Length: 161
Image (tube, rainbow, N blue to C red; front, side):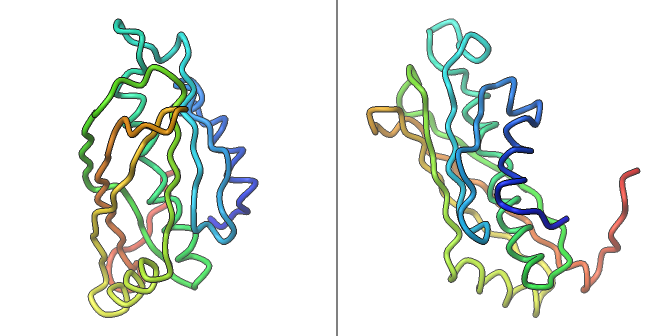
């Protein structure tokens, strides 16, 4: 479903798995080519060591490449199914303050996905992410593998209700 950047920002802010872990979408960029996210440290996501729980940090990264690709490709006329196929996180430093990350889809990323979807029908690629504390120190790196299937070249779309 196509939505505006502002509508999706607010929907994601109050999406329970993100809301209760204090994961806050600050902004989706024009045309869904970027996302700016904040992880607020709170009593709901602090672990025994007084740092942000690792599961919260990883959960914050989970949906965004899939959401961005889905919205961008819909606007280009594709009917797709997009999901996070796999992921890996490396914790480099405890998250003792609020944490931030920004992800960007480049025109090269989008063009590559379109070319592969037009020829092969599915696109699978790993994208890196970096998560920083409020002092700008790198605290975690993430590798998210995104899977995109062109529904015009195979799988039938099924409504879940």
